[in-house]
Length: 161
Image 1 (cartoon, rainbow, N blue to C red):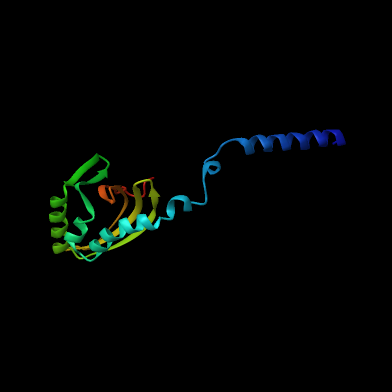
Image 2 (cartoon, rainbow, N blue to C red; image 1 turned 30 degrees about the horizontal axis):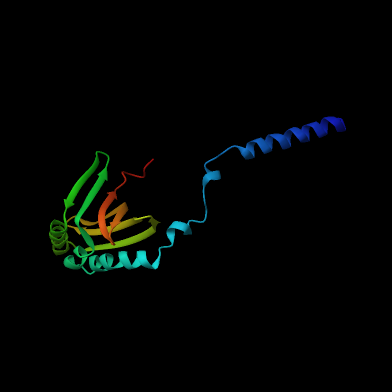
């Protein structure tokens, strides 16, 4: 190979790499520092914590105090969204029944807050007659006037592939 052919080959390789590097990829849009959304403000935490604490203490009245009068809870599955309950009084009654009938454990992976929407993953374990049942879900909580307004629970099927 002549020195000129070698230089042309190197130049072609450099130009090819440069062209490849400028092409958009999934990784080129990925922002590694998620703290812009994952770090909640003190105000957001103060808004979220009373309802979460009441729920873990199985305090239906306290949990209901953290939601709006027109609160609604939705389950979203393969057939689309289905409303579970609407209204503060109906929600308090439903969760009081759940607390009375269930022995549960819940782990929350708070992912962040986008505007008025809290995003988290919940891993719930409920004791059933057949033994413990674990459910993993993506939860979106919309807030209005400092209280939970709507809850959206997405429960994936299988591993999602």
